[in-house]
Image 1 (cartoon, rainbow, N blue to C red):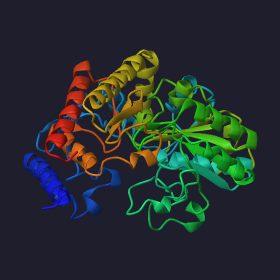
Image 2 (cartoon, helix red, strand yellow):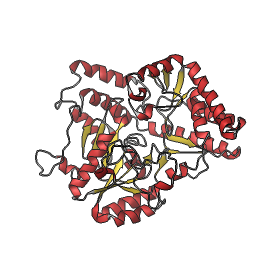
Image 3 (tube, rainbow, N blue to C red):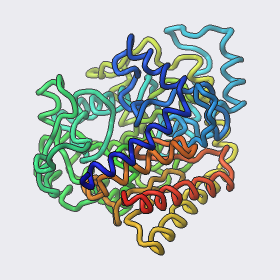
Length: 459
């Protein structure tokens, strides 16, 4: 038996243990597969060895269909910053429900929700609502092209901005060969799905993240570039923060060439700080897109900016206004839930210090342990967003992530689940419901998983 076969046998043993403790969950997923493609409603719900089948969630815990309890650091992919099923959000939804679930019209509760956005996020005068982060980034790019009269949008390698054709490019997911990605200074556009419209993704400019060559490439396309979109912390790439100096220079150069700077704050909005990445980094883009947290756990997206930047969304007064519409935009249940979340965050701004301190504690302890015991592992992230890569640092881009251990990463994820940790495959999040004891347990699970893989000869 060669080394690859031996390691596969070890990982398969972990998979069998997970299946054995969740037989009902496994059966439910297999049943889903008879009527749903892959048995899931989203690609990102797939997991090894099968997707989590959730029965209920509360606070910092989640329970599967077999009543196994897990410490939840996925939090609906960052959504539940107040923990699962927070009382104030449940009460807001229950209060709004008798008035109707959807109107397809304006309603009296939109103003307070929008006003909270404008008051909380620096540089925002106006906000418009939609139903997902994908929609929000699509509209932000449309607004940039309509305002500047230029055709092209640039994004960063490793950045995830939803599933529409323009930006479903160069996430950096593993491939048989990495040669096709192009040189680090000049990454090429790679479609992340069959069926994308050639006229969309082939014209998307792909930039190197946290690399000065990005600015040279921006200048190369300056006359055609309508906007540059960036995640201030790349989520799907593995929770990789942008350098503040990099963001500051990006702000300077986009102003210089007359291109929109778009912050994709679908994850970072209301998580890094009360005013999101704009406040945390002190860099004000032209437009920000939002989702997740501000929807209170319901489908949500938003585009926000200054009154001047949002001018071409003034449909009743401005010629050349962009097309933006949606039956469920500003849905009354969403605005009720979102208002409850934003009220809590704005009334307790000190909670960010506690959340960020817990994230710092995790990163400090894991990096200390890895260094002292000589593990090729690096904990990264910022504030209450974190991840541990099975690679020696520094981790500045998706290219660094690819240098990680081939078998350690899947082994770690299997052991996390086996040992009662619910977390995604590339990022973790902390909520106000988590305690210091929960962070200690999170650290212990990570350390034990590293020790287990070393003892088994996987790592």
